[in-house]
Length: 311
Image 1: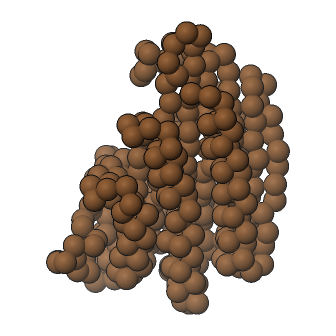
Image 2 (image 1 turned 30 degrees about the vertical axis):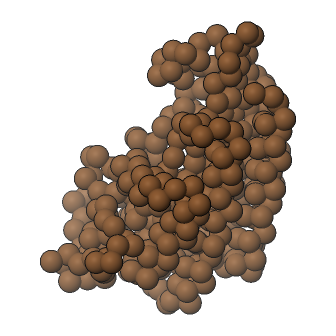
């Protein structure tokens, strides 16, 4: 695998970061992204962009990074012994958006590429990524729209792609200690290399390119919804779950911290505020209780798909 493949992915990712930031700043209408370039001593660096105190986004980040080195950390080679003794490049864009209005869902996504090489041996490479949605006051039509866009992005690559990566997302973003999904899912894929570089790269682009189509219409629909202290309290309580997932279960966060990554960039995904309340239970008939029915995996696009209820 020639380095022009890495260059092509990197060029795409930098351009994707630009498009995401301009689309998100436009829907925000008040704040803009602040950019910080950073270097990694062991090799590589990145371009972090953060938006804060906007009309829509209380905090959001869109990060590009390209890190490389002569050897991978033990935490990586323990899981994949075949990578021992290889130099590596990891390049990706990841984004997390925490809106201020509790009716506008939090969202996260990333697309990444990894390649490890050793003289005289075939390179080991793969793509990964996806996107997912975390509403606090879910609206059925929003969730259906979200999954419809995800399904459409996958369609050219085979009928089984969306169901497979949708199921993987439900499984990955699962808080085992809470027995609930982190949100209503989306797509998650990793170790993608089976159909050759060109097809895999095209799929990564399809995922990255469809995010704004999936998310912005939901932001625009829910931003006008009024909210007060009660909704804000519930939002901050549910953001606590987001933190729990990222610190306890998320492989990317753990890998980043264990491999000496840039802590500020890794923890950019954290909400600016969150709260925990002992043994909290919403009133069974409340709008807050309605969320529970959305935190179990389900088919959102089947003919029989209907609005979930807690009865």
